[in-house]
Length: 327
Image 1 (cartoon, rainbow, N blue to C red):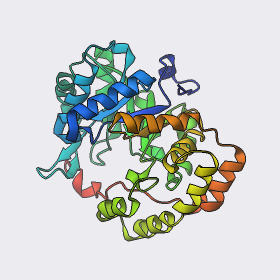
Image 2: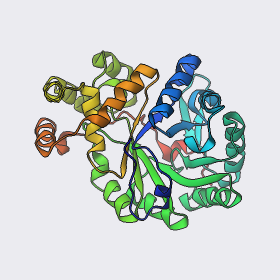
Image 3: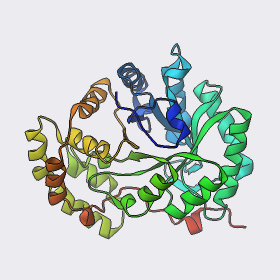
Image 4: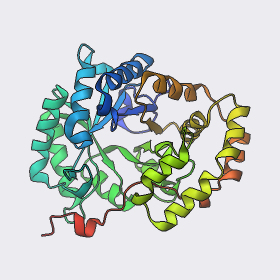
């Protein structure tokens, strides 16, 4: 198993797999999800990513059950907080107020059945609550021993700097794929300057890259993105066949090629996959066996140049209005 290597980052004192497992959609089939987590752990994938708002806490319960009987140190558990859920499952705001963070963690620890989490991070930053206050509150949980390291998700470079000035940030979680490379402009260089690793999620763009029915996947997420982003999605989707040719030449699937591409961008970058079955886990693991040469990377770049890689399926959220806690 390949491991993250982040110079100057104390998190690398613990070996963390460069392939991580996200659990957002696992709760729909509990037994299958637990089997997928077991398959990942058995294969050496120890980074398990969840959030207190994933299925309104059911994801954390599932992860907790999957970890029963396992050595605590065998899993590096990452938990996001702050997402405010509607009854229908959508998000309507971000709560990162410092006075509530400890209670959020308390509920997470109970659902997970753990005494501490390895990484705790706000899922986004509320513009009405200074990031310094949010990270400061999490740092106090580090001092108490309930959190080992601090992460942050979906932020810009300036916010990452501000957060890191309060307490060392170990990992920043953000969308990253061969079709969505906006982090390369500012966020990735800043993370590397500060010695912060990157957890890239959406590496398959929710199944648009390498999925069994990419058009159907795109139809499911098109309401979440702007018209310009949707147009870019459609342009890039039309290039899947050309990418498939490279994958075939490498004896791999398109999804494996896309995962391998993210891993090839540096050993300080993790590819977070949302495999929900043991079979999907095994399929993702094969990406670790795929070595992309410079010629391979150049071929991919020629198909989708960086300037055209603007696909991002994260939902549009006007945080100026939906941060909700405007003092």
